[in-house]
Image (cartoon, rainbow, N blue to C red; front, side, top):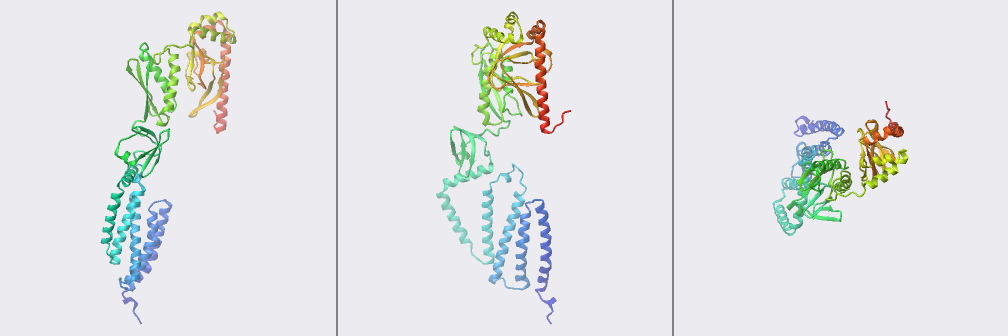
Length: 473
């Protein structure tokens, strides 16, 4: 009877039979835990469990347990497969260790996948070469030499194309800009719409400009979307030397602060350059809205300068705000308020006609008005502050007025915005007080209008709260 315990292969066979199932069970549990945690380490563990360990067990049985010669072809085939699987396992483990938990913005996260793929391919080729040299005794030195010479010849023949591709890969790695950013490259300025290995496509608004990566990598450009303190649009304006600088600075600052698309992290700034010249800096959310914001600012500035009797661009004329037009406007307003003509003529010098551009705010919520305004042309929109925005409650049309709280000295609850360019008659609070003292019925009418708008505001807020499920207390 053969004594199995004394056989040299028995220990290896017994070890494989016992260790293989235990190791597979342990790796299965580890893989399940990693998969539930969605860990990137689950992939190399699965490779180890499904392929590396079983093939390693077969190789151990063939070479150690059965004491087969390593020179046998099928033993070398199994050894080659095991070596290739070990190469894949090492690469997968390194990939998880280096790139598995890469933080956003780090070099590992920015590294283009093509670099990782090329490096992985090179390591696999080197590993296979070493493996074939060790297992099969192949001479790979000549192969490496041939590949080296071929690479040099191809590199010299395609140096321009390869240089552009390398520049593109370096740009992808450094990531000085991304899709959607606005670049200023000399005479080219626009939004990046595509980035590939060879070139960057920039939408200039008049077509797509294709910039070679080598030009960007070898030159300088400005990323307008990633400045340190946000993007700032600069607007130079001039007035007359008779305009007091502090008045102009205040008016410019108020007009700029009311613009949409401003960056909430900073505020507009105004500086006096001398000789009636000023510079307005507008921090906008993106270069994409620079043109729209500057255009709107200049439009609003035209109206604001005339309301403040300032000479924008040296023009001090205002053909709308004349005494004749004021008297005509008072004549339009008077009959509706039951005011005699003699009272209207007496206050003509204290009133004025103002113009507002579309989108301008005539009245903010939470302030005590210093005047009453009567709409002559255009339409105003009434709204109340609600959550993060405003809730529209109605409109103010020709012949109607705003700022009734100037009579009661109460804070306003509504916001009034010009839906389109409007013209209003501005009546100061002292003038309104005198008219009310002479004609008490005017106070009653103003009070009724004020109460009506407050009721509209309360009803609109209640309806909005009901639709959103909020209970008003």
